[in-house]
Image (cartoon, rainbow, N blue to C red; front, side, top):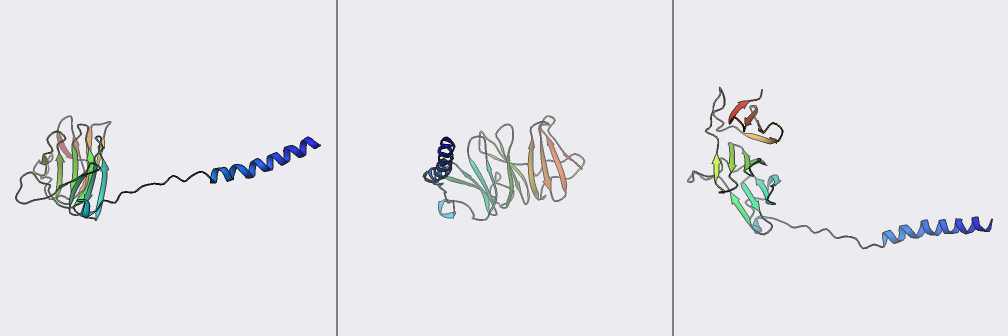
Length: 173
């Protein structure tokens, strides 16, 4: 009987002291970094965020695409004067393909930033199979399918896919 009382007291003490010791642990403080126009962001209205395989953070805004390496922001944007610029300032989605190239969906078409050269390739003038060009299509979303090796492209006019193996753009629907 005496042993039962001792075990009961120990049980009560352990159950009351363990939660106290857990609560007494120092709280881990999370740190947040603010990235704004002051730090070089093209616009504070963020439409999409993507981290690529090299660790860069790609931030799409309503006024350009931003690549952030943890220290410096590099801005990619539309320019009438440049041949190699984005097709629009408004960025809807960002995806990386199997070669490390960055695909950028905009309000006026689709662009690719080459991983090795950092050049912007505007694919708006490529003809689709039995259709018009991609130019002026609002690209709303992108999805890289690793199983079939295709890029799915959501537009206001339906779904398209680019097959990397045969390099053809076709309507999916």
